[in-house]
Each structure stands twice: as structure tokens, then as C-alpha cells.
Length: 94
Image (tube, rainbow, N blue to C red):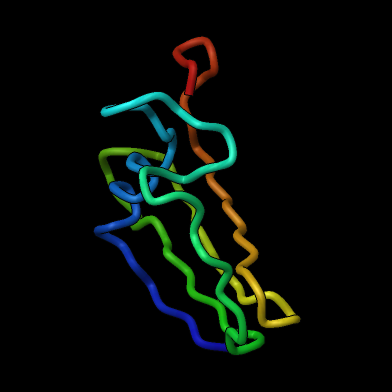
């Protein structure tokens, strides 16, 4: 298993991919953007995992990780997201 820790880019990646908006046009269901759907990647190495772990910080209690593992058939990636330590939901929505 190959594991890599990505710390500084994770919050940016989560924010930029949290919502796909329509900055320069309408949202079209079933497409990923101006260029259409992404191609399906095949023949990924089986059993490879990359993990991005949020660092421990004195400024927030939010902890967790995002992990992507190649699918057993070599097509696609299975993502696991585990986050904890959010403030009370009364302060949200989150």
C-alpha cells in the first residue's frame, strides 16, 4: 500500500470541490464542465491508496482524513472521508 500525506492542499481542495457552481454558465446535469464529462480511467494499479490527513492544530478541533483507493477492477477510485470535531450544529450549517 502506498500512502502519501498531503496537508497544505487538503483544505483548499475540499473548499474548491465542495460545490460545483455556475460561475460562467448554467449547471448542466450529467456534465462536469465546459469540456463535458471526464474520461473513465482504466488499468489503475490495484490496491494503491493515497491519504491526506488534516494536521493537528491549536486553532481548530477539526480532525480527519480523506483517502482514495484504486478499485479492485482497476477502474475508478473509492474515496473515504472521515472528519470530526465540528462545532455544534446550532452554529452551522456546515
